[in-house]
Image 1: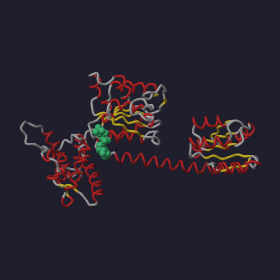
Image 2: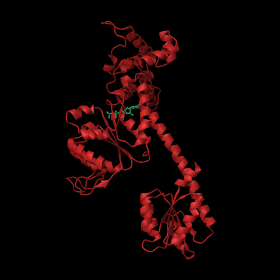
Image 3: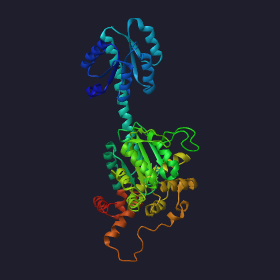
Image 4: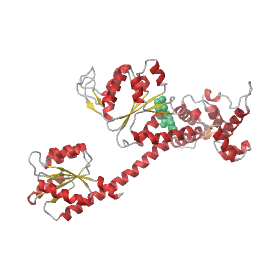
Length: 451
Ligand SMILES: Nc1ncnc2c1ncn2[C@@H]1O[C@H](COP(=O)(O)OP(=O)(O)OP(=O)(O)O)[C@@H](O)[C@H]1O
C-alpha cells in the first residue's frame, strides 16, 4: 500500500543544469518516487498542466523564464502545489523572497543530499496523510449519497446494485422514470461513485428553459452574440468540465439543440453561440426523462442517433407504488425532517398509514414529501390524521375491495399480506401475527409475490 502510494507521489524538477537533473534522477530512482524533469520553466509548466504533480523542486536562476515567473504561474493554476526552491549559496535572499511569494521552503544546492531527502520525505508523509483523509472523505460521501437514496424494496436494491456497477464506467446514462421518483438523486449517486466525484456535478432542467436560452445555457456565448449578451458566458457544459452534467427532462429539448448536443458528445468539443472557436470538454453526461423516449424517437420528436448515444446504459427509477414497503421508510424519513424543522415531534395515525399504502402516488416521492410537509403544519397534537390529508388520498380505494368479479385465492392471499404489512408498518414479526402464519411462511410468500 505504502509502496503504491509512494510510486504515485510525483516530483517535478525544474532546473537548467543538466548535471543537477541527472543526479536528482539517480537519487530519486532509489527512493521510488515518480520523477519528471524539465530543463526550463516553459517545459515545467507544460508538464504541470498535463500531469499530476505533488511537489516541484524549482531553480530560481534560469535563462528565459526565471524561477519567480514559474512559481507565480504554477501557483496560479495549482494554488495548493508544494514548491521547494533550490538555490545556490549566493541566492538565499532571493529564495526567501520566493517563500514569501508562496513557495514551501528553500534548500541550498550542494548541501548534503540527506537534507534534501529528509525534507522531501516530510512532504511525502504529509501528502500520504492527505491521501488517506481524502479516501475516507470519499467513502463517507459515497455512503452519504446512498443513505440519501432511501429504499430497501427489491427494485431499489437492484437499482443500487446497478448504480455501483455503472458509476465507475464513465459511460453515458439515461435515467427513465415518472416525475418525482428521484432521478436527480440517482444521477448524484452515480457521480459520487465515479472517478469524477471530486469534480463538479452540474444539473440543468431542460424543460424550464426556453429553446433560445437553452442553447446558450448549455454551450455558452460570446459577448454581443445576441441582444442582452453583455458579457461572455462559458455555459454549463464547460463548467462541468472533468465532472458530470445532468440533463434533466432531456425529452423536452428542440431538434436544433439535439443536433448540437449530439455533435458535442461525438466530437468532445463545443462552440459557444456567436463564436468561431471550439473548446475541448471532458464531461460525463447523465440524462433523465419522464417520457418513454423511444416513443419520441418513433414520432420523430427525438433524434434516434442522440437517443442511442445517451442510452449506452439505461436505468429505471421505480414508481413509489411499486416500492410499497419503502413508503414507510420514506414516511419516517420525511417525518423526522418535518419534526426537526418544526421543532416538535410529528407522527401519523394508523389510518393515515393505511391510506398511504393504498394510494397510487402519481407524483411519487416528491408528492409524499409535499403531503407530509403540508399536513405536518396543521397537525394538532403532533399526529397527522386522515382529515389533514388532501381529498385524493382520503378517497383512495381500500386494499381489499368487495369482490364484484371472481378473484383467485392467490390474489386474495397477496392482498391480505400487503394489508398486514401496511398495518404493521412493515414489521414482519407483527405482520405474521396478524396473518397467523409462521415467519418463514411470511418470508416465502413475500418473495413469491414480490412484495
Ligand atoms: N429514494 C429517495 N430517498 C429520499 N428522498 C428521495 C428519494 N427519491 C426522491 N427523493 C426526494 O424526492 C424529491 C424528488 O426527487 P427528484 O427531483 O430527484 O425526482 P425526479 O425524478 O428528478 O423528478 P422530475 O422528473 O420531476 O425532475 C426530492 O426532494 C428528492 O430529494
